[in-house]
Amino acid sequence: MLVLFETPAGLALFKVLDEGKLDKVEDLWKEFATSESARQIVKLKAFNKFENTSDALSAATLLIDSKPSKGLRKFLRAHCDGETLAVADSKLGNAIKEKLKIDCLHNNAVMELMRGLRNQLTELISGLAVQDLAPMSLGLSHSLSRYKLKFSPDKVDTMIIQAIGLLDDLDKELNTYAMRVREWYGWHFPELSKIVQDNIQYAKVVKLMGNRTNAVNLDFSEVLSEDTEAELKEAAVISMGTEVSDLDLANIKELCDQVLALSEYRAQLYDYLKSRMNTIAPNLTALVGELVGARLIAHGGSLLNLAKQPGSTVQILGAEKALFRALKTKHATPKYGLIFHASLIGQAAPKIKGKISRSLAAKTALAIRYDALGDGQDNTMGLENRAKLEARLRVLEGRELGRSAGSTKGKPKIEFYDKDRKKGAGALITPAKTYNPSADLVLGQTTDPAPKKPDSEHEVARPKRKHGEAELAPTGEAAEGSLKEEGDGEGEKRKKKKRKVESVDTVNQIPIDEAEEPMKKKKKKKKDEAHASELANRDDSAAPESKEELSKEEKKKKKKKQAEEVQEAGDSASKKKNKKKKKKDMGQ
Image 1 (cartoon, rainbow, N blue to C red):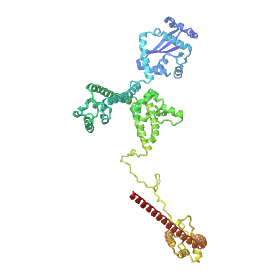
Image 2: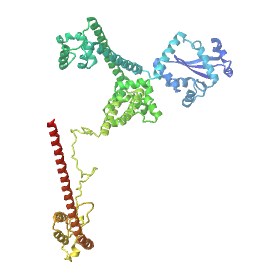
Image 3: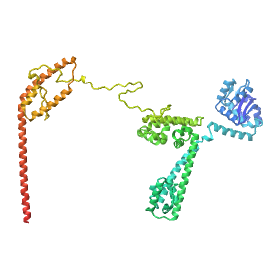
Image 4: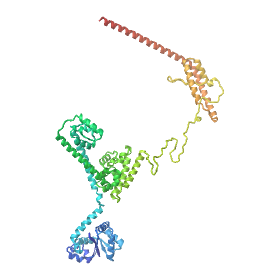
């Protein structure tokens, strides 16, 4: 029976001399109490030394994954002919059995035997001292840890987390210091805060100027534009600020130095963060930018932890409080978190920000996984996804690309809108539907002259008045005769209306098809008979209607005369009263 034992220096094969003692597992540790007793149980048969650290690392990583290395297979083929092999890993034993056809053994006795071998390793292997074994094991463990965690000095996301945290702190401190400078120097020159809006420029101007009386003789061209400089000098002459001592100005200048130093360090830190982000997460940086990408990594804890998150989590990362509040109150959940500050979402219209944030989060999740677990160091995937998202943004906004994809020409040809053109590739232009006058029906008149009938049949009745509405003009000859008989002002009005109706009828008259004429003649006969009967009734009531109208007009005239008489009497009485008052006043 042979025992396979892995060491930092190489692979060792031990021959078990007394297999009967393996049955007593509980007392096996006593056999390895001393080196002499250990040599009576096991003996070194062969040793395969690693050539260098990379060879040892590759062998160790394969053993961790329960896979035999190429060197191990050669070593076992050479020394394990017809022997049973004791291994510390059952999965490794199965792999060796499948590939090399060697029977492997793994149980509690083997594990206890491994423990004893590890205790007396330097005594059982000649030429392997303790002082040599310790650094070997330490170096191999470090190399193994780096490889297992995919450690690389260029992939240290901890630096990004610290850098973005410091950058945010610097922004807060800069804002606080700049506001303090404005308040402090504002007592001396309050107009300057409105003239110079930028905090860094304000600090530079204060440091250069000192007392406001020096502004006229100084040159601010390196800090300010010409217009701003002229405005500053004019305001310095007529400023309402108080006078300050030289000691106060010296302290204000020292504070300005602190502000400028912090701003320079902040710019330097931002450059460092940009370079680290382009090295560690180039695809993430291409999609969302350096600052947003760094904040996502810091919020996730590490790039690897962030790679384990789905796109929906990346989308709302940073809005956890709003999410849980929405879930608790059963309101709408937030659509974006830290990713809202990405430039793509800033370009989108408010209505489509949610759609773009969802698409961007999905692509960002893919980019993070590629950066964390992929072997590539370029940002081609991020740039491709960004181009796709920009195209989708234009589609959602209804914009057309200025240059068609793959074409060498300039702008696409603008087609004029035609309402008659149908949608589709093979569309035909069809003329719009026009008004069909032949489909109309004109009742009351026809183009063919009808045979004359008695007056009673051609008379057309007029509709009765309702609530003082004007009467419609009759169209027949009998109606004309009745209008002439009335002979008053109302008759003239009716004639005018009749002429209008006749003119409208002549415009609307359209030739009718011969097939439809018999039906229309029947309808006309029925209507003429109805009109004649109504007209007969109307003639009887026409005279009393005219009398009633005349009586109404006379009543209205009488009422007007009475109202005028009352007004004249009232006016005369008021005049008399005014005369009496004047006389009294003159007498007094």
